[in-house]
Length: 457
Image (cartoon, rainbow, N blue to C red; front, side, top):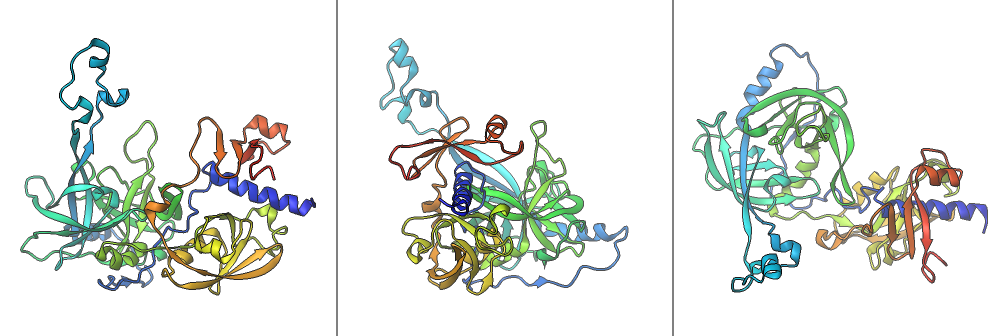
């Protein structure tokens, strides 16, 4: 085997191994939606550049104008309570060890549901219809949703609401008031989240720990920060140091014009603290605005082609026939998927989709998932240093069917590469030394190859 083929083999093997040990967080081409439903017009977005001075009254004015559109959300949901019999296969341990009689049907067969209460934040986007945006994780599995208006517990008015639509992968949800106040409701205005840059001033408004209409101020710390939203899936989010705490979820992140540019969704906490440490995350408003027409229908539709991809390794650019580091390296192809039917193979590099250049894995994700299912698009690939074009008909993503993810863990530092007949392990410092690799090398090493397996051949 030539040195070039050996290099390509190991580059592909490392990509597959990285998927197996969880190093590739977002690779299923299903992170953002295509938006074709037109049952609800998307809110207008102010794309004018941010300009003008900030003075002592800037944030005071923003808070005064924006707090009325922010609401407190309380939910109730049912969760199966753990019983002592769960640890004994549903059998009553007292009856087992002490010979005590069990109730008819056994303890393990009794329903054991407990009511769980939670709280979050939301903001009004349509006063006429009573529509409110919040986080998916605030209302997911909720049996009851209550929306409270008012700045203190004493003057708050609560109204029932219902779930209209939700989306796990953008952590967004749309709810609607069943009854609403007789007075006009203040609606949110939207800014262009793509204009935000590190250092831009922002304000967060929410209900942390039940403290209604808490206002905090900070800056955008980073944009397009990958954030895990589900197994093997991530979303680019805004990072901010504006204080976000439990209860802030679903609240607005505002620019200096008082326009919503994000939905506060999560914080990074250490083991010694349950509160804010200056690292918070918000879903960009542009993404959610694109979702709104579909959220209104109750279903979000995404495209998929059935491949797992990773970035092109720097050291493999020349061996893959590329003039520069670009494209998305195909690590695996799902059986009977659109990509498989079109002839896409592991080791291919996707460099163009429907005439649009692919500079990174994320480019491919955005384009494919924004494509309407049923659409046939040309994919330009680099294969064996030659350009190959195939036509792929985009399929609709079924989240439930795709929830299996990568092969499961077997314990320790080893993983079994399901379907490949090999056992993988993390590269430890000692293994790196034995293989004469740099001390800080990350990745996976083949620990064992199953006889007769795919990897052996």
